[in-house]
Amino acid sequence: MFSKLKQFKQAKELHSKLSGERAEGSGSWGKVKIVVNGAMEFVSVTVDPELMKPEEKDKLEAAIKEAGTNAVRNALQIMAKKAQEMGAVAPQP
Image (cartoon, rainbow, N blue to C red; front, side, top):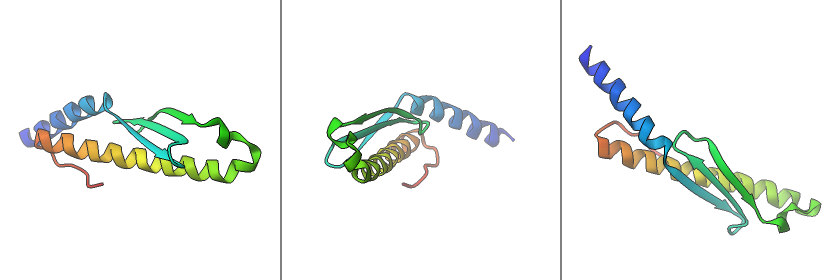
């Protein structure tokens, strides 16, 4: 029972530390940037105006997908590192 309580406290502490973390991903050679926090919530999205033209719709969609994927991947790496530092079990990116 106490081990479960300890795990819960570790998870809560880890979540608290990660909520302040930020990870950025980019797509289309930096023309789209997405920042996520440790809770995997999008904090900001920046798009180069050049990609906002109607004829660039497909490129913009691909760049958003790429940037979001990169941001989440980077956040998972940060989470794994923080969890290891705390001695907790970390998700593998």
